[in-house]
Image (cartoon, rainbow, N blue to C red; front, top):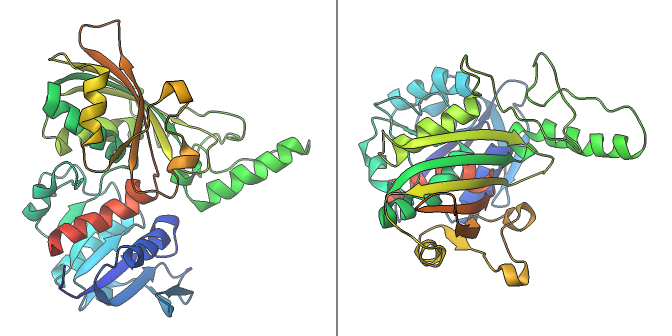
Length: 341
């Protein structure tokens, strides 16, 4: 990866944007120029990267002159407005929003699963939803081993997925609740919702807006994106997504039914050899994946692998990963590394 490139990070002051700049340095990404872009309200902040202070600039159409790779993590509307402008000026856009994920002209890429799709881009590459990423990293090697018939997913999603304000709110709610003070809420299920709920010591079975069929958008994303990434358009998959009072790292309970027989022992061996996966599965020693252990790591952790005795060829798994790192920032940078390899 010798080529030197000019990079822009859009949404540089957000949780994912800040993590992107950290990981660019961690992974020795070969950038010579770096632009940190954000809205007018965040412009003129200074962020230290590689011992150098970079001024955050207000994004506009001309922000991408001379940029080779633009990482977008500022929301769907910003991506739709400025992504095409970046492409016009010669940049490859790696977009972390939902703006282009299901566009047939835009590859949706998880490097451990479908790296070749990255090279089919026409200027924009989409980074999948955080829960989708960790799920397909585990499902894909199992699909190759035994052919998946059906997937049932239930997520336990950390509050960091709703942004820094939601994390701060969770901490304040805990203090207020334990101090017998009134608890206020404005960020869960999302800011501006008809009703906002306390997440401290609670669970909220909604992420994003509801569709007419009763599924919320996060569930729809997991279903449709998984089919696209694994190139399994007829895959039978369903999901229930739940926000839990965990600061960082999402968890998923997976029930997978296969066409062929695969034992828990075989599944552990398959996953143990799979890129990006770390198997932590030792019930005798009470060892299994947990958010506290996964937070700060780029791995997808799999454990509690056991047979589902209710079907002929079924397994249950527990999957945990850092949603800000592998679920967003790291996966985006891994896509860029593919292009430069």
